[in-house]
Amino acid sequence: MDSATLISVVSIITAGITIAIGALGTALGEGRAVAQAMTAISQQPDEAGTIARTLFVGLAIIESVAIYCLVISMILIFANPFVVK
Amino acid sequence: MEILKLEYITPDALVLWQAGFVKLNGTILYTWITMAVLVLISWLATRRVTSGSDFGQWQNFLEAVVEIVSSQIEDISSEQPGRLLAFIGTLFLFIAFSNLFMELPGYVPPTSSLSTTAALALCVFFAVPVYGIATVGLVGYLKQYAKPTPFMLPFNVMGEFTRTLALAVRLFGNIMSETKIAAILLVVIPLFLPVAMQLLGLLIGMIQAYIFTILAMLYIASSERRENEAAEALPPGP
Image (cartoon, rainbow over all chains, first blue to last red):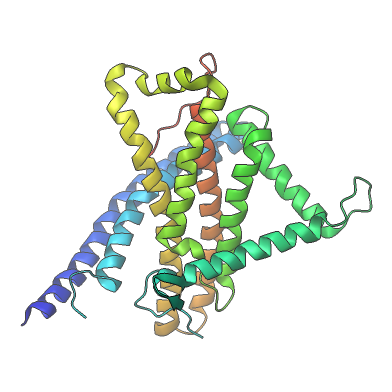
């Protein structure tokens, strides 16, 4: 196996692991956040607008961690700087 | 029709015309198209503006958009939206329209390029001190970095940069992955599923435009918050 093939293999495996771990933690965190927001809305339906807006902003901030992982795995697969074309 | 090849992750790689080091790439072209559409719509809408009851559809549409943006600004920053409306409204309309046109065949959204989103995030980065100093003065603005204790100074300064980076990468990652996933699905399962993904893309595009705008507004509002105002404090983001 020459070095170019080795780099490709390692990149693909790493991309898969990156997105898997990144999605795992983020999914758990977002699930907790949404569950809490549902509880809050059911207790105080009048404040649903404020809670939903804060929830969206919070979700976006949590989600950006997964997006970093996604960008890195996308770069590894589509625009890998170590692969010699 | 495939405008962008699968192995290019941004429309930056799509060079249409080149003279020396001056390049016309896909990002610039599609930004121009989006800007032209926005200007055209605004021109059509404001060509015959009336305050009477016989206004047209376009004026109704634009009035609704301006009304929504200004009510959101009032809700969050609890002040008159006058000064913020132009900046925030422009950000929202540009991102929302370029994400909306993602569904058109042959259009690559300029927000799927890191250069566009980085430029937008830099606008927010510089708008925060400008609006902050205009409201609370230079000393009042600089004092905010030493809150709650002066030990937090390096973290506050660092947060200023990392949140700009997060703003740019979040929008870029979402839109880029959406266009890429749609393109990959089109190759793998060309029947029906890409349509569902495009519907999801419509939702994601609008939510990302909303989130980018809300976060920009929060950053600006937190920089011009007065001493006695106990508005809700949101974390500055990762």
